Image (cartoon, rainbow, N blue to C red; front, side):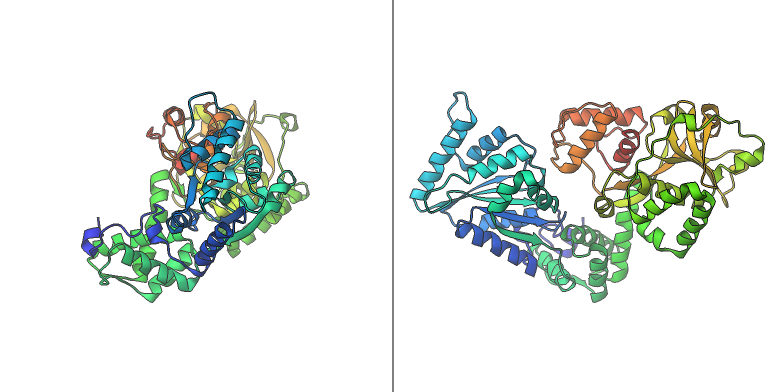
Length: 521
């Protein structure tokens, strides 16, 4: 939209890994130097790790463009493969001629070895580059280790580059992969851009995109970009793309801090508006004096028996709660004073909801902090409440709770055969009957979910797709665990969306995945 207005030949902030846009910051230059050194010196194994959005894939594509013609290359992006599929893909990528007879792993390796020896005899080299390597199974990694045995008496015939997220380091350090880990001769961890590099990165992309030099970002705008992105190239692209749209709407050729802040707000706001998210960041919420005071007060109300749960939640220690319905007896909540003890205000219900999330979280703290921890709100028919597996709150909208000044909520810890376990203002669990829940069910409910700011689309292949497939299976929507968003996964996502009244478009955005998170246990 704004491309022609600013005189660009193309959008300079596309998220595609175009090697022309690689900005060689100190970290990216060092990573590229490590790769070229490992390949030229035939070191055998090279490992490059880095966080999501730090430019690993772009770096891989740029590397391939800098290799000499004598170096043959094979690039693998789909890491959800078997050991046999790996060998088949490697041969295909190298252009090895495979006959139509039955193919075994031995035949694949023999053909590959013939190709590597022929390349070496002609003074060439061969590079196998595997992206998203943290998703490789132990079996496939062991097969990759065996490929390093394809060598002469003095030289490695194939140089293998493993590129992946930080989890790859943990995977390689496992005892079962010790032999592979010891063979890695070159390692580098790709870091986000420094503050001073953000300006260079943005201006580099403007030039490559065909900019005429008439578009400027103020120093305070660059500062705001860094504060939001923390040097992550993918986030920089996202906020700059939206900031240029804001500038275009104002007919301005200078991007100010205000425009960047507006762009940041729109990025966050789009997710909230589209998917019904109320952005309650736990880290910022927990840092406020109000919440600290509230948690201390709630801990006192919870009593001696609940002290361990509060301490575990604050320290990050995990504990899985198992409640037997024998601990409670269904109660009839009359008179009104007893009912009122279960109806929490906004702050109390939020504090307990986030507290329960951290106490019961199955994800490690690093994974939670990497995502956006927020409150999701849904309109759900009452017949579905029995399938909920995570704590949630019901928004009470009866005549006595319809005040816009002080809304009330019923906080549910878990569903039981008799009804549910609710948490009162004093922090104690109370068993409530099914009739009581249905009586106060307003269809509007909410819970905490650590979402990623992405939409999963048909044709994608990623760890996020694999995780969604696991959740679909747990929820009873059976698909193959491939990590690939194919036709069967697309159909099951649409069926799930239709069943629960969501927009049935087959796009697994944060809203769809939040509901899967809730009902999958």
